[in-house]
Image (cartoon, rainbow, N blue to C red):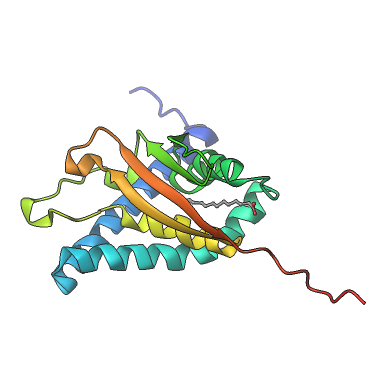
Length: 185
Ligand code: MYR
């Protein structure tokens, strides 16, 4: 019998990460399914997923800033790149492309070719109108609000609805200037 070769640390870690990712994906699916059962209306499920994401986003920003060492972005264009390349990588394990900027640089699209949230997912016809990944729009909205940016985040394309990619539109509505905490005398 061939001896059992010990797996290297890297191989074990990669396996643990894969299992964690699958567990995360399946858990998210179970949450969506439960919301569909409890709330019945797909519109209500969309709202609830967005709100859950927002609640996560307002907390997750601290972890993001602490772990990423990202400093203040010079403008919204840099912020969008940071979300797409650093934020998505950190929390979803994938990156997004930033495209379709509007003329004044306050609206852009984040396009995901690969979306781990939808592995194993197939939506039945009864779920028409569901934005399955709506938690993500809420996360981005919540996280940005904590760094003084009010945004509107909406889905433009969704592969679960037959589109060719996942595309989120992020629109900067208002940048609240941070207050200087001390009074000048
Ligand atoms: C700043 O200018 O203060 C830095 C702003 C960086 C904001 C980054 C927000 C990260 C959001 C992560 C979203 C992950 C979605 C899965």
